[in-house]
Image 1: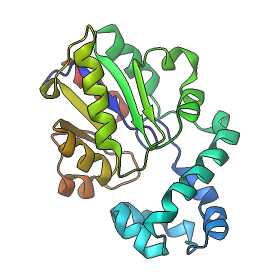
Image 2: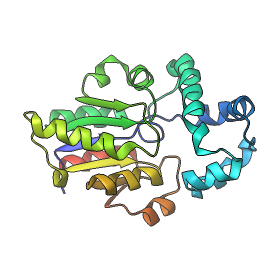
Image 3: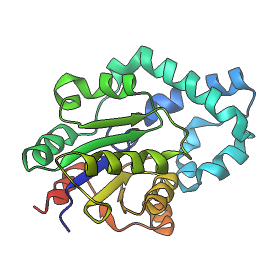
Length: 214
């Protein structure tokens, strides 16, 4: 199906930030009082939901905003070292050139997202909804839809897709009433995303051109 509105998650979907996340995980654990992990065996956690991962390391929900702020601050200092996945730049140009409206809904900060994208690619994004809890994305997706309906694009829910890499992204898409597209290269294993429910799968970043029906 062709979509008129493509809403992207950022970490693990557009940006290859997992190596950075793992490099600071134990620093955050020490700072905020939850369990360290053996990052050499981090692959097993790709099959964990966010809630299961939080339970595994003893991170209560009330601490999550504090940890997120610390992570965003650390990433802000190193944004220039974090790459986009190979081909993402061309995909965003391709979609924008074919009239697909682009938006980003991410729990990361808008500053970090813009820093990693760079001025050109950030300029292709019509709307940024950033800095919310990983469990609060549905309301931000709805905000993007509302903005589109009020604007010239007029995209409706049936013409929109949220592309992400975690079960929480699938949950948010379902709550907002739009399709969910699961990427194979992100934080969560594709098997976990299939269980969460996805309407489309993208094996490589370049496969995202299919959003425009090409």
